[in-house]
Length: 52
Image 1 (cartoon, one colour):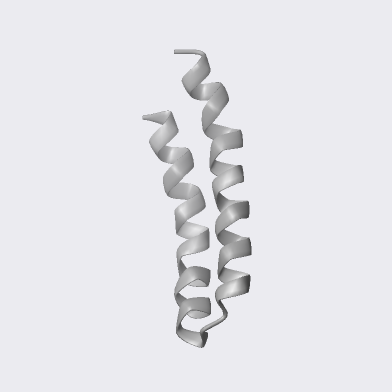
Image 2 (spheres, one colour; image 1 turned 180 degrees about the vertical axis):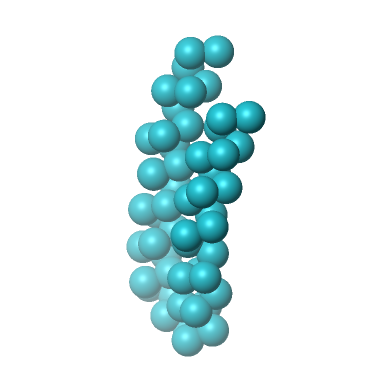
């Protein structure tokens, strides 16, 4: 459940940025934010999963 909280928190912040950049057609910035969000989720979720 804690892992889900981390993923939801990151997605809550990033989702509006994804939508705005996608609508504006800024695929390069979208890709960069996607990579950062993925790294952030892995960084926070990995220790939680590792302790289970």
